[in-house]
Amino acid sequence: MAEGKNVVVATPENLFYVSDFFGSGVGVVTPEKTLIVTSPMEEERANLMGVEVEVIPAAGSRATRETVAKNLGKGGPCYIDDDSRMRGSKRFVKNEELFLAARRVKDSEEVRRIERASEILDEIFTMLEGELKRGRTEREVAAEVVKTALIAGATTSGFGGSLSPTILASGENGAFPHSELTDRKIRDGDFVISDLTFRYQGYCSDATRTFAVGRVSGEMKRNYAAVLEAQEYGARLAKAGKVCSEIHEGVVSRLKRHSLEKYFVHGTGHGVGIQVHEAPSLGRESKTRLARGDVITVEPGVYFPGKYGIRIEDTLLVARQSRPLNKYQKELVTV
Image 1 (cartoon, rainbow, N blue to C red):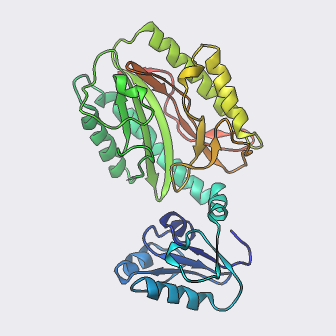
Image 2: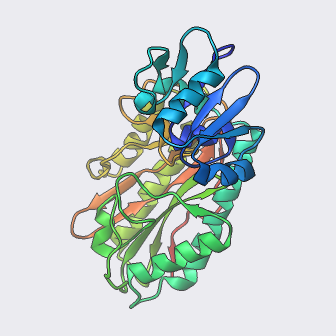
Image 3: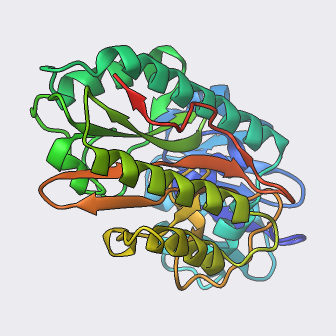
């Protein structure tokens, strides 16, 4: 992360990254050891979940600051991701980007966890083939989604732009990229967007499929085929060394062939890891180059207000030829 430097982490995501403990506390990483300074309430759980760490209980903010300072010892400045809990000390240099950069490229254990999360999403998509029935509400089907995920060993991660734990948007609700769950009943002729993101052992996968309920129009089928073409083209472009904005531009160019580019209202994708949205961003302004070991999404969509939406998304592991971690079919599935 910062070779030879002491670092202090105070956000749950970064604490988890250095310790495998997700909770409230402060992590202290030195060349010799990793410490978790947490409340007595969390001491036992931190000892149980933490990997190769020493846990020190500290009751209250002042005790936490003193314990961190004592274990850092004497020396120069150290990096911290969030200094709100360590106010009053001039020793800390806040640098959020350092920690995000360290988390960006995944090692084999992180990839293993994301792969298992991806397998669970595939299992949920298969389950939905039997659950997306006419007359059922979005909430009822979403409850089955969450139940299936939890039984499989996943945990919810949620979306930054939605209150709902999962997106299951039928008919006109699919025209909202981040639709909230409603009591709308699924109808014949609907497209239903199922956007799933769940964690496995702390790491997310993010995938979307759009299902057809009964007979849908020829226009809907043609638009679905166009989005699938754009998604698969974007996935082929997404390889190590590629500039992220060029991937987005390539996806837009494919939608433009079908006069659909104006209905594509978000970026092509994003990084995935401990959080569902991480670096890098695959948007029109991102000049970042993909690196081997990045885990990203490619997720074009088109949205027709008051009618329906279509989105297709995979999580991919970036390499010379990137590999999709979601295996559930992308050809239109009719239920």
